[in-house]
Amino acid sequence: MTALLEIEQLEVGFGATAAVRGASLAVERGETHCLVGESGCGKSVTALAVMNLLARGGRRQAKRLAFEGEDIAGLDDHGMARLRGNRMAMIFQEPMTSLNPAYTVGSQMTEVLRRHRKVPQSQAVDRAADLLARVGITAPGLRLGQFPHQLSGGLRQRVMIAMALMCEPQLLIADEPTTALDVTVQAQILRLLAQLQRDLGLGMLLITHDLGIVARVAHRVSVMYAGEVVESASTAELFADPRHPYTQGLLRCVPIPGKVARDSPLGSIPGTVPRIGPGFEGCGFRDRCDFADASCAVAVPRRQVGATHEYLCRLTA
Amino acid sequence: MLRFFVRRLIVALLVTATVMTLAFVLTRLSGDLAISIAGPNATQADVDAVRKAYGLDRPVIRQYFDWVGRALTGDLGDSYFFKTRVANLLAERMPVTLTLGIVGLLIALAVSLPLGILAAVRENTVLDRLVQMVAVIGQAMPSFWLGLILMITLGLRGWLPISGTGSWQHYVMPGIVLAFSAIPALTRLTRAGMIQAMSSDYIRTARAKGLSRASILLKHALRNAAIPVVAIAAVALGFMLGGSIVIEQVFALHGVGFLAWESIGKNDFPVVQAVVMVLAVIYVALTTIADLLNAVLDPRLRSA
Image 1 (cartoon, rainbow over the protein chains, first blue to last red):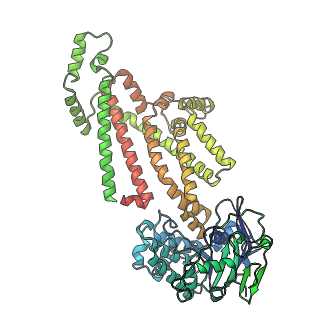
Image 2 (image 1 turned 45 degrees about the horizontal axis):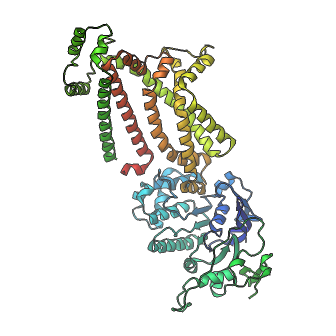
Image 3 (image 1 turned 135 degrees about the vertical axis):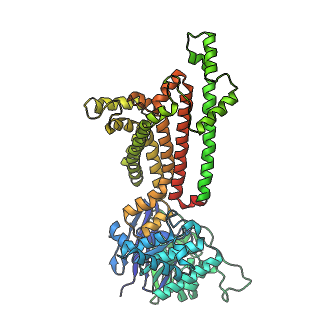
C-alpha cells in the first residue's frame, strides 16, 4: 500500500535561491511525521509546495508528488483546490492573522464544508459547533457568532484546527502550530493535535523546530537542513542512534531528562544555515561540520540503516 | 456599536459648527458687504440705507448668532440678487448637483473597482502598468478640457445631449467628467488594498481551504481592501458635490455649484453662506456614513 503523501526529489526555488533541494519524505496513513530543522531550512516551503500554496515567484518541481497514490504535481489550480481543505488541510504558524478579520468564526468554518460538500447551512453550522466542542472550546454556539479579534491566540488556533477538520481530511499539515503561542497554551494545543490524530486516524505532517515536541508526538522524523532531508528515521531510532552530524548536533542542543547529565553544558552548532543558490554541489552542512573533508564537496551518498532509517552523509558509523 | 455611532455624531456636529463659523467669517472678510451690494454708483446715503436694511450695522457677534439661530430653524434668509428665499433656491438647485454627484460616483466606482482588482491580480505585468498609466493621465487631465473633448466626440455626433438637464442622458457626459476626478485615486487605492490583502495570511488560509478564485478575490480580499476605498469614495462624492462648479458651467447645469459661482460674483452673501453650510453638512454626513459603512465591513472598528 502506498503512503498517504509521497514527496520525492522536491525542488523549490525563489529567484536565485534554492529553498528546497531534492527533499524526499513520505507520510503514512495515521502517522505523525515530524519535519524538523532550524529556521530557513525549507520546512515551511516544503509544506506549502505540497499544498501548491507557494508565494508568487516560487518554482516547484518534483520527481514525484503523490497524495493517496495519485500524482498531484501535475494538477492545475482547480484540481488542487478540490483537494485542499477537503482531503488535505493545513494549519499555520500565525493564528493571530490566519483568520479573516471581516467574517465570523462560524461563517469561515461553514464555508469550507459547503465548498466541498453539498450540505445545507444548518447542518454545516452543527458540524462547526461539534468540532469547536471537540477542540476544547466551551460555548461553541457563542464562538461561532464571534469575530477573530474577539478570540485569544490559543482560541484562534483551536478554531483553525477545527476548521481544518471540517471535511474530515486524510492529511493534516501543521506548520509550527504552537510557535506563536504561550508555553502553557502550546502544550494544550499539542496534546489536542496528538489526540485528534489518534482518534481520527489522521496522517499528520507536523513541522517544528522543537525536538521536545518531536519526542512527545512523532512516530517518524525527518530532519531537514539547507533544503534537504538529511536524515529520516522512526522517532525511537533517531533519538537513540542519530547518524547525520547535524542531527547529532541538534540533539546535543536539547536537554533530555535522564539522558543529559545535569551539570554538563548544552551543545550548540556554530554558524547559520547558508543561503544556497542553484547548482550547489555536495553537502550543505560541510561548512559547519566537524567531520567535513574534501569529499564532502561532491555528491553525498544516501545511506541506509535498517529498513526505516536513512541519512545523507559520507560517514558510515 | 451605539457608542461608536454617538461619538461619530458628536464629531460631525462639531465639524459642522466650525464650518458654519468659517463660512460666516469668510463672507465678512471679503470686504464691506453694504458697499458691494449697493453697487458702484451708490452714494454714502444709499450704502447706509443698505447697511441698515440688511442688519449689517449691528455688532458682528449678534449678526452671527442671529444667522446661526435662523439656520437651525431652517430659515436661511433671502437672496438679494434672486429676490427669493435661499431655501427655495437650494431646494431647486440641489437635486441637479446631487444627481450629478451620484452619477459621477457610480461611474467612478464601476470603472475603478474592476480596474484596481485587475491591476492587483496582474501585479507588475503590462496590464498593471497600463492601468496605472491611465490613472496618472486621468489625474493630470483638466476636467473642463475633458468635458470639451467629450462634447466634440460624443455630443456633436448627436449621441448625447451637450447641455441642460432635460433627461437622464444629460447627466452622462458631466458624470463621466466628474468621475474622472475620482477614478485615479480610487483605482490606485483598490489596487494597493487588494495587493496587501492578497498577500495576507487569511488569504493563504482561504486558498488552503480550497475556495474558488472568485470567492478568494471578491469575498475575502475585496471585503478588506474596500475599507479605505469606502472612506475615499465618500470624500470623492463630497468633492464632486462641492467641486462641480466648473462642470456645471461647462455643461450649463443649473446646480448648486453654478448657484455658488453666480452668488459669489454678486456678493449675495446669504446664498454663499447657505451653500457653504449645506455642502459642509452633506460632506460631514457622507464621511459619517462612510465611517458607519466601514464599521459594517470591519468588525474591529465597532469596538473602537
